[in-house]
Image 1 (tube, rainbow over the protein chains, first blue to last red):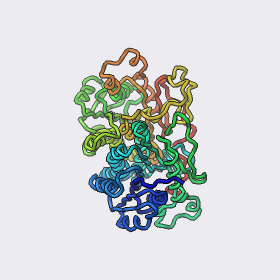
Image 2 (cartoon, one colour; image 1 turned 45 degrees about the horizontal axis):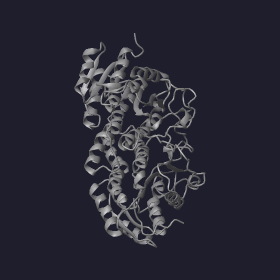
Image 3 (spheres, each protein chain N blue to C red; image 1 turned 135 degrees about the vertical axis):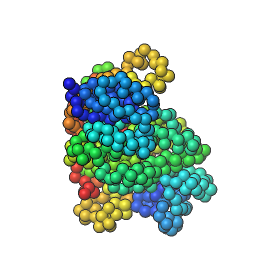
Image 4 (cartoon, rainbow over the protein chains, first blue to last red; image 1 turned 90 degrees about the vertical axis):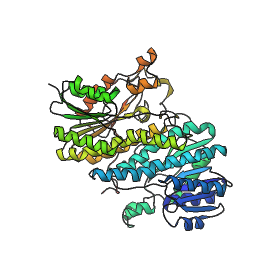
Length: 261
Length: 284
């Protein structure tokens, strides 16, 4: 297993679901983790995940620049900088095309503010710190339908803004991988299908159809995939995880790494 | 007599370049136009064309501007049949940029290229649903639809393709295009999601993924002084506009139509593998 002792990681949206699994896996691998969440229990969750790496938590909203500055300060002052950045925080909401225009305008700010703009600003804050430390890893948490369709339900019709926010991450993953290769910073996307999280269970108010829920992947599997990705050293790729298939790092093509659309 | 007599087409970013050519091509087939731009030359179309033209100064990244423009067009003509979301901007942006530049770039680049497509679409869609028909064309880039990608493309129909011997061309516009490419990739979420949601309403949504085409934006990259070789390699905006007119009449939906330098500028066969597979249990 990869040893991340002495490395400082930031995980956004780390109090629950996938983010919590990412933070736990990083701490288990020895990394010092700073997690944030809009949920009030971010500090208590952090405390519960410690070991062997240290874990600190703070209540922060990634759509707010001042909150992001506090988050980065906590990682820098607590653990000496930032080496690993896992952009997990995301907002999901139904935004049907039949909605009123005024609601659409508000939805844009709320969803894009977190999923796209917040991710952008936090990266801009962390990249200089990574360069200072001689390199790093950025992982953008995306969704399976930004990869060639391999399972049903891609690009759902009622979530245009969520879909757009995740497709947009491809632009960051590609451009940053190219721009930061010389600085030893790797940038990849993790694109998973339905995974057993509170967010997904929440769509059925906690009571999903049993047949469907039985197919879901587990957050711990995705977290292991993320560790394998960091250990692997590749950059500029989207790593897919589809229900019904093994959750494993795909072989890396030697050339022409592509994100297909 | 044109194929779009009695139709009303909205074109954003129509003052120069591709948008201007798209507007002229639609008018030449009889469409009445509602055009907007942040450039004042936008108004010249009204003087130059014989067709009805409503020209509005509007910034597509501004929600109030978009609402005023679209509602104004519906009031003026009583209908909108075609929306061509063409307005777009480019700025160099890098992951090492400072915060103030980044926030400004986000507002301008993502605001125009992605939010603009979102706002124009959302402002027009309720009207199109009410009418029971419509065509939406989003203008995108070959950075996400290049020769060799998506997966089903090959070089068979393009013996002059510059990447012929080099395997699939890597996607992406380059290291200084993070915001531009993000804004354009994001359009996929709108094109594919809307195409599904609007299929029952007889409204089709497709995108044009443009490679290097003779346009204001491309000329600006070359300081308006391109070498003859570069200029000769570019696709012609008029050819792309011709394909757009075919696409509007074709009846397909939910597709990215690729235009890659070295390939024939034609409407390709319909995709056999859709960008989505219906049947998601998370759908209502």
